[in-house]
Image 1: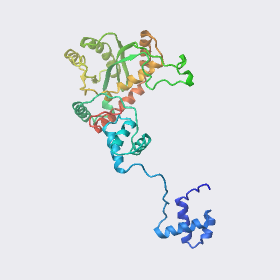
Image 2: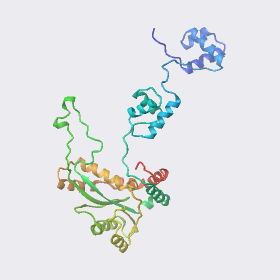
Image 3: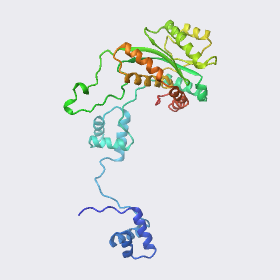
Image 4: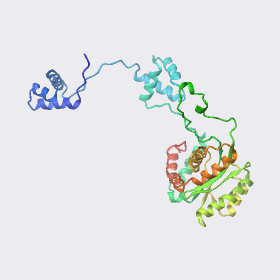
Length: 340
């Protein structure tokens, strides 16, 4: 005999209400569409408990106790990179008798998910204190204040870079290693170093850097590309210039150059790419370059320049608008890593 579906709580409450109104169990059974015996059982239980109760269901006993579940949570938090098999062995040493699936189920009940670890710079306690102080000093800044900042950075772009999500192909199991189904890699991919700047008004100048960057090379870059960018985007208005703490950026000659041109430089907390919106612009640029599929350095340089000019001002503005949220995230994390 097939099992019957459990009656809903609403139907049981309706049965009780009809019986309280003086209707017979036979009339109620006909009205609701169930057997008379079912109506009688519901009424009896209602009189016993004073309320409509849901029937307890039998099933397989739970394999672990609340105490054992707490042990598993402690094992997980001790080393978050452990596999379920490793945690199972440790849990069994503590007295549990479980399988891998039970470990996964208990962790899922606690809200844990096995995720790919995010790549973030290592932050020392000093780094966190500096980041927190920097964010707090600027938490009252509005988007208009951040619109006066011009952000800059260097980045290296490699041929084939930008395919972060991987390449998916349709193939049968026997075709996995066929030419059309492979993602080709090179041992030493060709690459180019570039310098660029941006603000809420859009992208500024960008250049390919063909040599290692020292203080003099950096000054030449600022003179040839930063100054024209400032004049183009801001005219004679005052701006704040941001760059990171690379040794060539903080050289005395660089500070003197900026001072002579009356450019205010922004202090910057170390290991804080999440606070620089140009990092998001680099990610977008690399994606765009990857789609153009360059095969040599000349093609790569052309693809970079074309892609740079295709980045619209709206995208840059959206990055600048995210600055207040970035600061809030750093403050909330007490100087730690954020999602940006």
